[in-house]
Length: 234
Image (cartoon, rainbow, N blue to C red):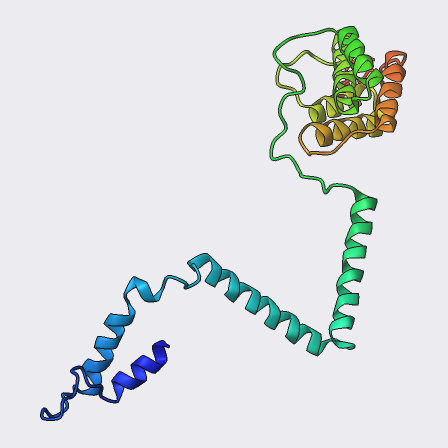
């Protein structure tokens, strides 16, 4: 409708009714078009126009349609071939997600292992067992790691130090318990993954950490001595 009006007025339109005696009154094409645009800009002509959001959605779906049309044209088998490829990709992604679990998020920092409320190793163990009995494996793993570190502090194998992280505790404990270095590092990594990395602990992870706690309790430390100065009496 808008185009018809503009074309009519653009060619020169009569603005006054013609009579038998008066000559027709016309205006040039430019002013006629401007007059038509002013007329058609009135709200009464746009009551049924789609909203800005609807126009944006229409443009988006047109783009999606063009994209899939181009992709199906370049894919063997056309649209059906494209569908098969998409389903295959989704199947691979689902298989990787099921196999690897939620992607790890590396912690930007390593907060302290303990909170501001000091507790004994026995208290941490009791809390860990209580969480494990309810199937709360995240909390159980956290408390068991705290029990391990607190136990080493109580045995004077680690100096009590506020703000120590799980990784630091594992590295320091490995100096006097070198046979358990790998398990200590694994326990610290499990603690970090659960506490700061968004991972979900399992019963098996808790069982391994609990076994490490019991093993360390009965392990004698390896005392390290500084080498004697050259010439010093032995």
